[in-house]
Image 1 (cartoon, rainbow, N blue to C red):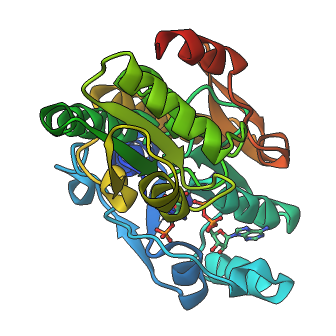
Image 2: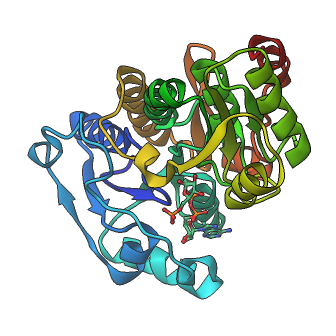
Image 3: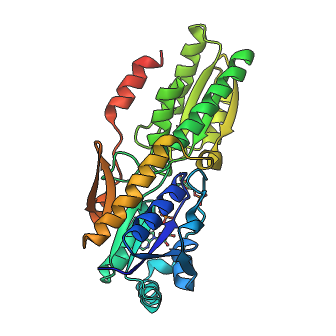
Amino acid sequence: MFKRIAVMTSGGDAPGMNAAVRAVVRAALDRGVEVYGIRQAYAGLLAGNMELLTSREVSGIIQRGGTILQTARNEEFKTKAGQSRAKRNLHQRGIEAVVVIGGDGSLRGALALECLGFPVIGVPASIDNDINGTNMSIGVDTALNVIMDALDRIRDTATSHTRAFIIEVMGRNCGYLAITAALIGGAEIVITPEQHVPMEEVAQALSNAYSRGKSHAIAVIAEGASYRTADLSNYLTNERSVGFEIRLIILGHIVRGGSPTAFDRLLATRMGVKAVELLLDGQTGLMVGLDGRDMVGIPIKDATGTMRPLNESFFAMHNFLSR
Ligand code: ADP
Ligand code: F6P
């Protein structure tokens, strides 16, 4: 079986990536396998930026946000020439397999290596929760907790001033963070890429909240919505009176930072260990997924083929809970 593998974190960083790296390194060392850490994702792989990780190098990182291996986005790796060079760099160091911890794009990159005959296992890590084949990706729970905390704080000040806040959250093309935040943060209205809401309808929801005597209102908008958050804010401020004074907040990268929650640490730990187990079991081209209470391996091509759909019942619930 393998004597030397590598691990990397790629795409947008997600809280819990470090916990996953630690789990991969220690699970592998426990089975007599050496682990190289590739720095700065596919860019580092192409530059040969990798070094042996010992158990000590992954000490004291389980609670740290971001990624000690750093991450990057890289266009060259999307080309066949880049992928072949990456494979050569791995062979040159005697690395026989790689664990890729990252989002949808990073997993597509892993699949490209697998197509060249290089063994890979993927671990889903992205705050967006847009990856199919797993109930949750690493980082989602922490991001949701940050958003929830922000919404609670914003409501305090909104109530004091009788204001409505438009709050934009990340998620790229996926509305998971937005709809879930709306449910757990008690937002009056939510706008996602999956469910278009005309600006007039947003205005109506806020105006209804005002008429019902609410002292605050919150509209959560996903960054991937069909109109820009600034345009919505402008509409509600200048073109349509809803009773409340309007304020706009873009939470942006704040949501991606911070110490991973207990859920994310455990998820990342279990996923990292499972990745090593799958590799040592001779499996390749799989992504680790959380299925119910179990860790499973599913083909990366199935996980990356389509975006994880939202649970329709979340919208139905939000409809009557927001009144
Ligand atoms: P995430 O992994 O968070 O979704 P990206 O979509 O930016 O982030 O992907 C991260 C990196 O993965 C890209 O910069 C690129 O190097 C690599 N990648 C993305 N898509 C592909 C692809 N189709 N083939 C090969 N590599 C890819
Ligand atoms: O995929 C994670 C994510 O945070 C998305 O929610 C967001 O659209 C994107 O990354 C932002 O990327 P960057 O950090 O390159 O601005």
